[in-house]
Image 1 (tube, rainbow over the protein chains, first blue to last red):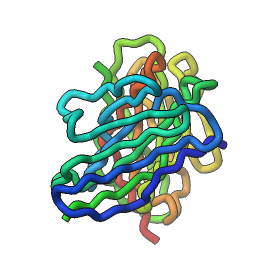
Image 2: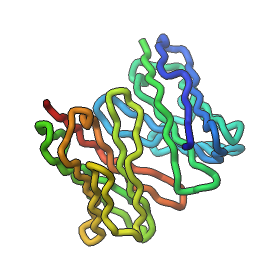
Image 3: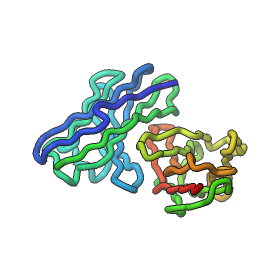
Length: 116
Length: 114
């Protein structure tokens, strides 16, 4: 079956630093990937839609200068949290849409970010 | 606008009981997809089912069954003879097939006690 990986699975960083999270589709091509954020005991909230070769589309209220998204290839999207603050601590989940089966969206295992 | 409501925040049952998780959705689209996911403590989402808006047939998979009713905009999930391993947060989600924009409900935390 289709597999999406995320790296790292967890990361601890200090306030003010930046951290990059990778999302890869391992056995299919994904022109479109999605980034979600999940705070403890809450639901998944869509942050942005990442499109290969073009700018990401951000949901209302998500700061595009803080959450930089780069979708440089058909199998890789990265989310960089810049100048991280403790309130950015969250569980970040990506998903990838299979280019061959457009209604299928596969989720990665998530990345737990803690900002101290 | 699309919206998914899971009114049950937490449910606790004793093993072997049947339990139904409710999901009500709102959408103006005639074509859409509905999903259920399980999220165990590890955090990774586990896909359970996808149903498109034109297929109202109920589905059974082992101890799991789903009841899709367009007339009431509901897509309920029943676990029969629950087990401790069923303990998790369950999310219902609605997707627009034009852009795969997926909206999740708030989730229902299910605890199955031995």
